[in-house]
Length: 397
Ligand code: FEO
Image (tube, rainbow, N blue to C red; front, top):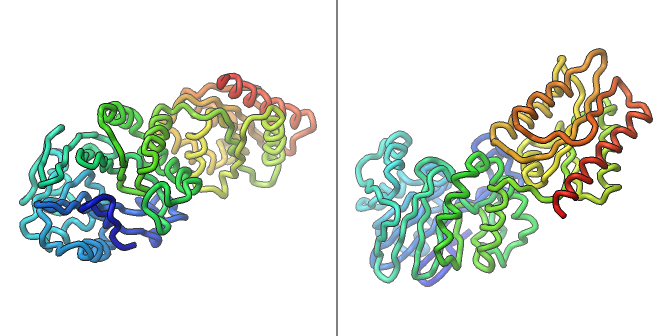
């Protein structure tokens, strides 16, 4: 995508990545991702963040649509992760007088990742830098997502360049701004981005949101995904809710099944949830990447887990999902459990143990059955679904 003017003299010069299969070599990108870089042309010229290394030439071409990259005075590093700093060495070669601005913590990462020490100037929290008509104010927001992260505010246009915060997966389909794009496609990918990438850092995200409260923000320009101009409070509100781990009143049912027996019970549990009128999403853990399972678990207040016993423990895809939730420190969830076994139990016990570590609250009857569930056991499954749904709806009254 070519350069796009956000305001007079301020341009998006980022790139769309529809080639990378796995973000950070872990997280699938079915809709791609954008690396947003911003150019401010004034008496002094500043670039805010770059892009992932393989896309450096595309970034340079976008800058060249506006001006000669050799005229860059400043590179503002909001975040050193290579999806934003990968093109930094090339930009530095093209702009020999470039000053690289970042938090003191960025210094070590700049040296470690690129062997660069010269030209770096640390900025401090609240520091203001005049570019001419425009100025930049830097706010340290450590651990949203790495320790060196900061945000950059442009007061004259009230634009917040927020880094990873308020970002999301999804390449920009022809538009840049929230009002140009189908948010029904982008918001679930923002949630998946938040829960899997930033989710471990909920407290730093809350601190950053509190810190921004005094700022008048007309536009939020994150490092990934849409630029929020029509309603910046929408993405701030979503990040606020997600980082408080509140959960919407609804249920995600995540199950695994080798030969259909656990699935049979899952279907009856689902009927129980729906009978009580709670929103429900059913997901097969064997056929869904854990990042999607985590996102839906982050969305809803309650989950119901079902798994067969495998190797005397819990079915591998369910264990992988639970370990991911544990890694990301997801809290404050209600959980229902069911599991099957062939000759001796193990799945329910193993799930219970991880859930205790997570401090999630167990709700409803735990249904454990041998082989194919009987009608009585299926009815217990429906009772489990009803109990979880009732509880989650009661909590939302
Ligand atoms: Fe988009 Fe933490 O990098």
